[in-house]
Length: 375
Image (cartoon, rainbow, N blue to C red):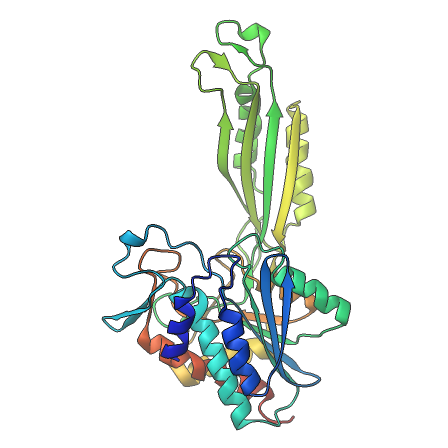
């Protein structure tokens, strides 16, 4: 397990470059009897490795790409050279999520060796486009699966979900994400002659104030109320005495099932029109909300955590987004379970060795309980 995780960390697979990670994993899984299909779209590598046939279908989902390391000199050891210190494995991707990918691979090898005649299908699905724009990764693969009629019953996502100890929190859903890129037109002019200009900053301010205090919904049992956050506003020419001719703003909604993307779009554009703004807006939906409220997978994950980790996990829908948002619409139950996330995307990213050692057995236990034996 340590050797495989280290081998993956050594491959500098900054999104969307897979850097050979999937080829390494496919070679191992093929030796274990898996059928491996490489699905490359654009610059993105995706791997679909399956063992068995028919249903039910259990998929372990992960990504081989990582975020940039930042300044290498800021790391205590080179970011793409795995290092062991104080009971931890250090390196970019150690927690997010090459250790989970390695654990899933080791677990699947052990599972099919112990259960060569397991029922249904067990699979590993990987992409190199999770940390990037997420267009040619699992989003694109999901469209291919729809075209093929490929079913998925259960999906375990290896994202680093835990907080203080392995298994103390599982993600049973995620909020949707909707981004608006807004441009408001004004009329450029001299600040001493405002009557000859139209300041888009002044024009936008009342609309922004209204958007900022709007209660979009009350949330529900699974999700908090929808949040609206502005991430950037820019205007001006750089000169102190010029009224700008336009303003650009970027904002994002994180929303549950109490609101829809279409509904949020309509409400925002209504506010902008009410304030008589001359605007253009481009919308990007990076994912719809999903939640696994019950079902066999959630039950099995909790049972496995009780047995393997002695944990009673908190069920959460918080955090950002994950590739589970593309699998849930296929009709799958989706649960995210992985190591602690305290160091992800940071300098000196790391995972505790005891977590690293425990992950394969945990994933194998889930497979055993779901498809290890016949009904």
